[in-house]
Length: 67
Image: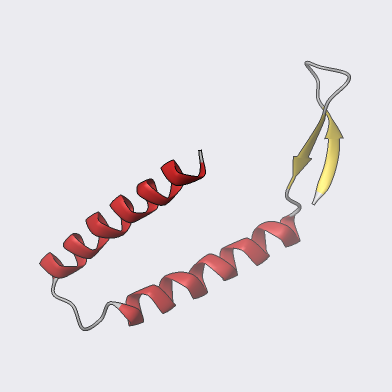
């Protein structure tokens, strides 16, 4: 990660990922995707879609409770 001055606002600093940071994030997301695929491997496509809908609903409900 590196911080750079914001060209449009001299008071602000903008955080950017370095090349090594982007590589780390790419690996982490790839590992996460593999784990999620393994977790739902026993579900049919319809069941996966239903699970995604229910998890989204649960997440939105939890978010609303925090506000």
